[in-house]
Length: 228
Image (tube, rainbow, N blue to C red):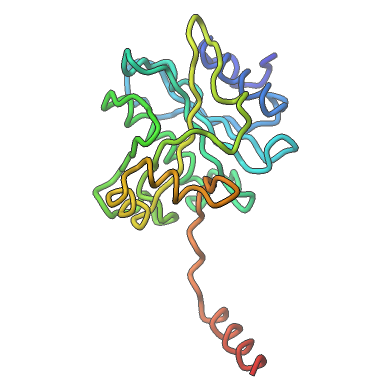
């Protein structure tokens, strides 16, 4: 099934993880974006990324780890892979920091979990810089919080790989305001009340708002004058 260039360098587990994604999203392996890990943070298994564009199955971009489940971080927790949901306004353009921060953030969270031997569980918070410092100038995110991937169908949640089940969690990027709420109300209440409204989960990554420049201010001023 796997014919693209990247298939030759993958482990058996990575292939099975990818097959799970391909079956769930009903996509051809040739139609996804695959990011090989260039930096080897450990001497064991590389953690790659796959990016699936919006389609009939799921109307947002999905960024997902491929190989994080090679690591058994805690005997009491299942192996896992991580996913992040990006809005349709985001683009998989990897030579621009304004877009690449998202896959880089997910990859760094996965490697941070491996380095610190912190098993993934719902409510786990990862901060990748000193408190209050954004991950990149292109985002307000300072890290992420792990949650159940509620925006997807149940079929995505786990897959039998080898002799055990691998869990698929979602990481939602958080900013300083989010982190203060987590500190005040706790991660589980934050997920329950801040990542949901009365109808839907609100777990799509927020893009950094475009700063208002001079021409935008002029247009806004003129619009207000026209409205009286």
